[in-house]
Image (cartoon, rainbow, N blue to C red; front, side, top):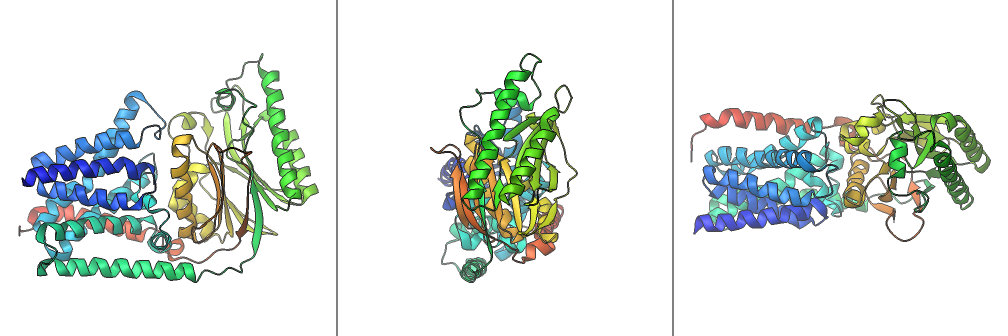
Length: 491
């Protein structure tokens, strides 16, 4: 009967994994981890951990369908790797927590979970993709914890709930033995929720603001796959003129759209990642037109653009070029983190430094798409006293919501407003507390333009100053638990 209940818990928990991987349903994550911890703690290790791994493989395969940018054998290997990493905290918890009692028994799982998430973010190709902290998007008081210890604190709290609830579940909620860990969790959670709510309530509304617009490409100019071929430099001499004419039409679209938004009052216009493609031979002439536009309309023009070097091994310069109202190029930044696979095979990588430039509207920091999934990289913007982050991006349908939500946490961590212009995704503006100011979905009916009044200036945060100390502490504690477990006496 006990094993049957545990297997039901395993199946139910695994069934919730695809839910929280794809949609912001915060309670699904709390429930899934609780059910899975209960299953692995109840089943014998010889049955529980292999069953967990198999269930996670099936769940992750469903949750990552069309999200991972690969197929075939690489997709299966990636699913196996992700599932193995997810299973590690359960394995350590099964070994160590069984030899501990009280509060200590509930802390092994959250410490191990954060340790694995953090090590993955620093060593695996996906950066912070898959962190359960992102599943809590929408619960703003809890999200504010990212301003103190980063997303790792949120992941810790969710995992700690799972181990604490399971500890009380198996021992009876009225037992005297479960009161200390329950009181500890409830006290910490209540404090975090109240502190987060106060932080939001105390947020000022009178900060200087900047009217911002983001644009998107026309839907019907290129046939499917054509922009990809151009980006890869796969253009034959016979196609050069025909595709060059299309690119010139694309240039007109963005320049005229920027002029329109400038005359509607926008002072910063942002284009998505790689949305404006230009052959290297035509780049100088195009940039001169862009400088004239920025000067004549008195705007800051932040252009996500791709310069194509035909015939070269790495043909793609993935750039963010910022021109000020004087017509001066203030920033020309190459993306520092290429997405593994297709992009990494064609893109020239930048130097890993976040540019921050002073303008009459404030200090502007620039980065591109996947760069924003590396919290330590983004922290450079706060350390260099930026007033706003400009983040062109390029997504696809299956990831557009997930990637949009991730950007909110970078705003909170660094106390910075963030403007995200996304091709094939969701353009958005966030304030320093992670609140959504405006959105525009490329896949919705309309031209994809977004406008927002963005409050400028940074709000000082502990995370921006101290970084990932909490995550490193969890790594150290997890390693200690792994080493010490054989020497712990059983209960």
